[in-house]
Amino acid sequence: MTTGLLIWYLATSILMAAILFRPVKKFIFVQKVRKAEGKLKRELSEEERQELEKKSVPVTAVIVVTFAFVFNRILIHNYFIAK
Image (cartoon, rainbow, N blue to C red; front, side, top):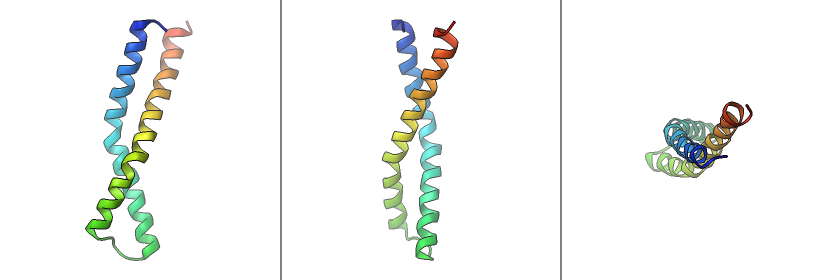
């Protein structure tokens, strides 16, 4: 991979991860809240929701960063290197 292509790969991967972070975090948070409410058979308090939201951040970061880098690697390999 050339230097220019490597910089492009890193920049677009970080940008993609940043763009995807908020919607994926919201999705994971909603799933965690539904699971907890179903398990407890009651609505969660605001404090419990905030705690679940904090717990969803590291999971979201790992998923989004991994996806962005793998997706861009496949994209760059298929369209720029494998010609």
